[in-house]
Length: 193
Image 1 (cartoon, one colour):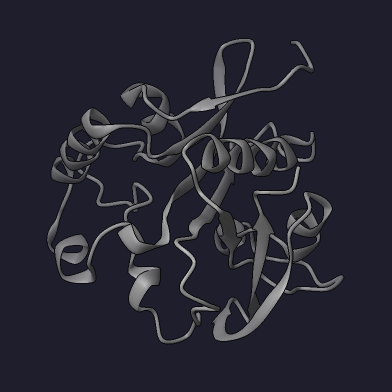
Image 2 (cartoon, helix red, strand yellow; image 1 turned 90 degrees about the horizontal axis):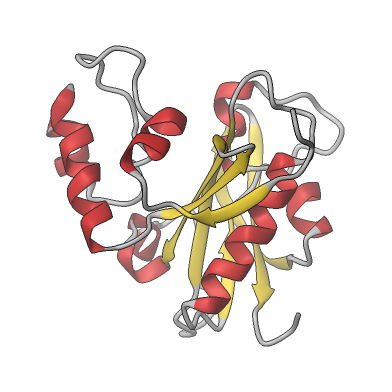
């Protein structure tokens, strides 16, 4: 297996499904829709309806980025304009200013590929994707876990240290907490490399 990781826009349905879809067709798993669409719509969809909805979204364009190793999808990052997500109205994660920022809110690496730098590549890929699409800045809302262990299920928000290593800087505290860890608002100015 190659150690090279390539990050590309998430446009292939089967590859997106491999990272955020269910193992069983009738399962009502996230599909990374929780922050992308209003809660009422998200909570109403069940089973295969969720996958069909994602397929329709993909027809409009990428939903983020995927990391590949040897053409196999091994990682996912959800990236979109904040105004197009539920973060636009989220009371726990504040708006810093009126800049039309983008958000990266989910980092997922397939089991068997963790601890190999894929999340770092995904964050860099999210930065490049947002920049290429004209975003002036990219926000993240990771866990501020310090040295504490984080449950893998709740680590989807990413870890503060990983985002800071990619050039993100503190912009605000939040009142959001996941798995006992506070989340912070970090921002990467995309006018800067």
